[in-house]
Length: 138
Image (cartoon, one colour):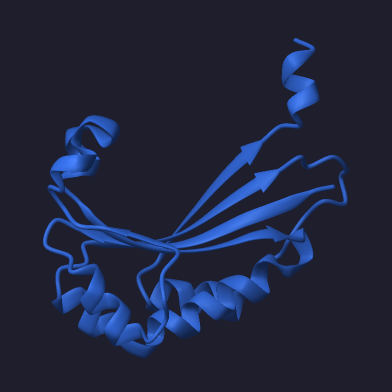
C-alpha cells in the first residue's frame, strides 16, 4: 500500500531545539544540538554543525498529505518568526513517498496551501522510494 512519511524540519547552526519546542508548543519526534560530540562521526561535518528540531508523522495515505502539510503550517505559523530569530536557518517539510504503485497514487496541493507554504518560507522536499521488491529484482 502506498504511504508517506512527512517531517517538519527546522535547523540552524545556532538553533536551540528546546526553545523551538517552547515557542511552537509541540513535542518533537527528534532533536539535536549543533556540534554534539556524540553525533560527529554519524552525521558528518555539515549536518553535525547544524542543530535540528523534527516532527514526524508516518504511514500517511497519499490523499491525506495536504492535511498533514496544513497541520505543519499551522504549527509553524504559531511562532515561526520567533524561531527564525532564535537561529533557524531553514524550515522544510520533507515528504517521503513509499511504494507508489498506480497512476492514481497522487496528492494535490491547492494554490491557497502552496501560497501559505511560500509565505511561511517553508521549502518542500519530496523523495520517492520504490517498492523494495522492484529494487531487488533488478
